[in-house]
Amino acid sequence: MSLYKTGGFFTQGPFAESEKRAEDFAANITMSMYFEETVKQQMMIEEEYIQAVCDGNEKLAAEKRQELDLTEGAFKLTATLFDTAANVS
Image (spheres, rainbow, N blue to C red):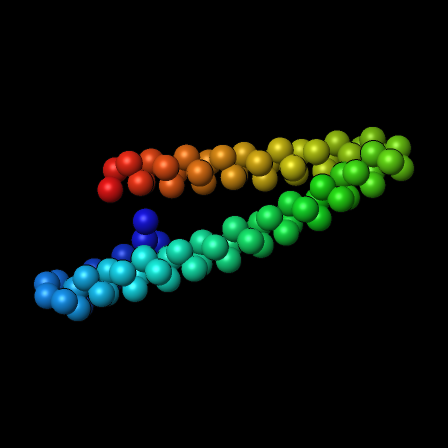
């Protein structure tokens, strides 16, 4: 799944395939970076949630739980989109 649809300079020949592969590679690197950042953020939120629960701060714990649920939903949506794109291709 390519995030970049440039239309391509090369439409046929050996460079057309190379261009497509380069676009796919760039998209995969970008998605990997975003995924890694999201996982780091989720881990930080989990730690904050656990700390809030341990401290008995119910309001903060509820906020952090909501953030965790939102992040988990984003992961599921992304996985569904990539699965759908893989089945379409």
